[in-house]
Image 1 (tube, rainbow, N blue to C red):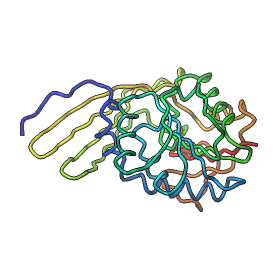
Image 2 (tube, helix red, strand yellow):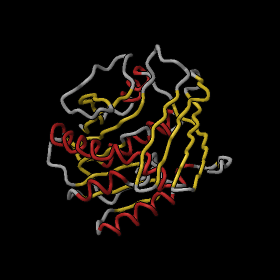
Image 3 (cartoon, one colour):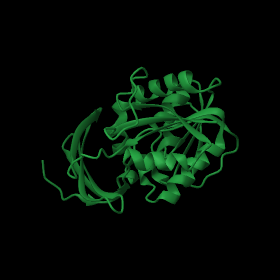
Image 4 (cartoon, helix red, strand yellow):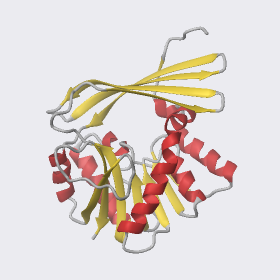
Length: 262
């Protein structure tokens, strides 16, 4: 098999490969969202909203379970991919092209979710606060927001590499995620994601560098205080076990916050 030089591009513009990379997480995440809605929302949940929905793994899965879904994202190829997937499965959802820090929904929702670091694409405090306030403004009283992202423990190393492989049919996608640099003062880390796609005798390589905002527990706690209409119900982690909770301390890393509108 001939080696090819990696293409430097936005990996969100290649939604099929992005979707394969995370497809194994979908059922566990959807099960957790349902369990959290039953446990923490004050009223039955029927309408759900996902900001930064990407390829819509969860939009599609939860729509197939009978919920009414709205998904919002800035990336057009991902939204087009989502619409084709919904059409193939005979499902319906509202798909919006827009900014997760500045959006308007046609009607309030019972719950919202953003489970895997999409929140960290908001690179300054003002955008993050606007996002939380915008979600709160569109939640019914007693509705919940399930927000999952990586916090930075105080003793965390600045170097990190993750690698995993997922397959769909004859297509095999290997993802390598590497932290290139960390600036704790500016609260940004630079990441590089590398994709290796193999499909039979074909090979495709892609590289994408992008920034993420960093949060310690204290920094996120301070941000939450600036949006008083949201209260913290509980903290879980990326194992998505509804009965396993964690204290809000400096050891937190893979965190899933359940917030509720007062």
